[in-house]
Amino acid sequence: MKKVFVDFVPEGEFELGREQSRHLIKSLRMKKGDTVTVCAGDGFDYGCIIKDSSKETAVLEVCYRQACGSEPSVFVTVYQGVAKGDKAEDVIQKCTELGASAFVNVLCARSISRPDEKTAAKKLERYKKIALEAAQQSGRGIIPEVRSMTSLENALKNSSGELKIIFYENGGEKLSDIINDKNIKSIDIFIGPEGGFEESEVQRVLDAGGKCATLGPRILRTQTAPVAACSAIMLLTDNM
Image (cartoon, rainbow, N blue to C red; front, side):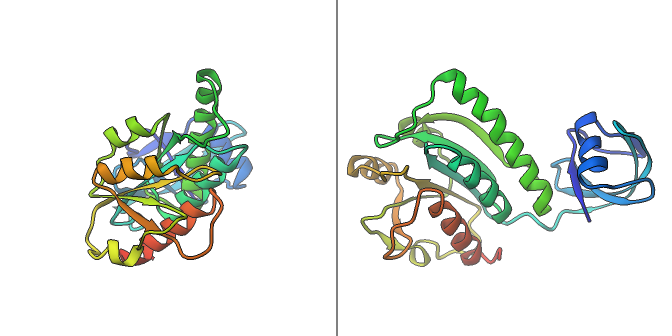
């Protein structure tokens, strides 16, 4: 069933906002009498029927409420080294589909792209939209949070995962050796930009209690590494 997100808990009959209505009617080509799942990010899915629709508005009625079964048991935050072009968009889209719950772009020593404050704010709005669209497409129960760009130092200060894992192309432990508890609730992963991490950055994460991991003998692109890491984490925690 198609899914849309709202910023309120739906009850009885309600009207969707213009953007979500247009998504439902124009993009998904839904009409009166069709059913849709509405999610408010409260852990529940609301099964609804379209009671009425026009070009700009859709009126829905709640038929039932049930616990959302699509969210993983582990909360994964992706700390992604700022990369060139639209690579960050690919990371957010694919990792949202895989189950990541939060994203932070991190300025690293080898980050080639270094957007100013205005550009970063504009990109942030774009990233949030991509997270929303990917969450709807993949049937997520939440819209992953996309936080403002920050430094590695500040990222480590705000990192609160039970596990901190930095993926390093020069080697590290096997991920299966680091994640040995399938009931772990939160993992923060750190991915380098195109040029990878400097040794001092890896050491900074280790000093903050992190673990250094490898994704195998092949060097992955900056937009490929987080997808591989999220896939492996979901498998190791019984979420795939």
